[in-house]
Amino acid sequence: VARPAPDGAAMKVWGAVVGKPRDAALAAAIREYEARAARYWPLEVVEVKEESARSASETVVMRKEGERLLERLPGAARLVLCDPGGEAMDSRAFAAMLQQQRERAQDLAIVIGGAHGIGDVVRERPHRRLSLAPWTLPHELARLVLAEQLYRAGTIVRNEPYHK
Image (cartoon, rainbow, N blue to C red; front, side, top):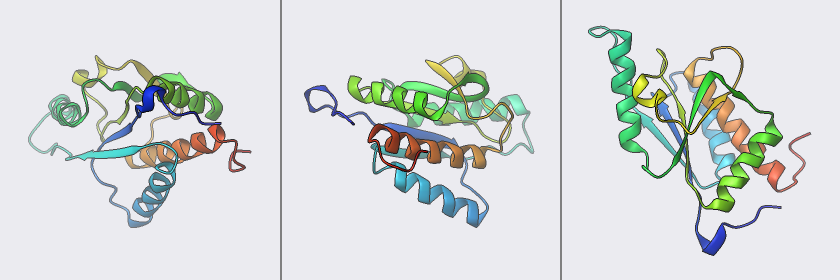
């Protein structure tokens, strides 16, 4: 059963992503799951502009996108970086981690890099690295997976039937 944060404080989940989904069907699925997730967790999605790779190296692109992400996130939020080399969690463990953050009234910023990945400016900052899959996902698909898992985590915490 979900418990409120101590002293009425609220935890917010920040989804920080590079770019907007280009495929209309994928964008619709992302919006649907982000809306579902927002019923369980105060959710704020931050989209930052993709950097053009035409005139810059991948390193420069990743650095600029990373700086944009960090500028838009609250400094006190615990930063979780989605990374194929990160910690693998099943849905129940992810739900428990989110609930723990809620009980601490600690904002959580979950970051998904762009098409070229994420630069060192962000790689040096996370409190945790989370693997959404053992393979590299396109960033738009990673966003859909994260949104679905946020929704699933909410149903787990409330002991609702979605998670089987």
